[in-house]
Length: 165
Image (cartoon, rainbow, N blue to C red; front, side, top):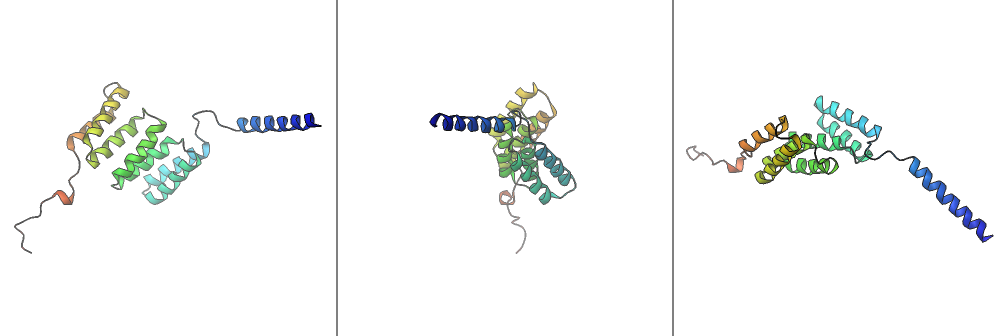
């Protein structure tokens, strides 16, 4: 009797393990639903529907957290909205998934420049040069952003002392 119940437990365990392994996607393959949501989010962004695009792209990232394109597009929207800190974090997520992504390296570098972190932006530039083999459009854009420097904020501008109150 004991042998039969142990055999039954072992058989059930084997069936459940093989069933769960059979249903998994191959390593590195992003789910089709997540890719579909990414395409929808990009189309919404192109149409100027940023809030809707953010919701769709966040859903794409939730459906499959390996969807590196969703993180890059969310980061680009954050930069577009003037949120470089958020963009840096989203680019970091994308670079965790694909460390040699040229668009993510360039975007993160530009966001770092916007935050005033020029040394870290130069590190991204060096890494980007290694990935590109020296020259590529992303290197040129990041080099130009570093040369331009961080944007001037209103707190940095001296008030006009000649103006009368």
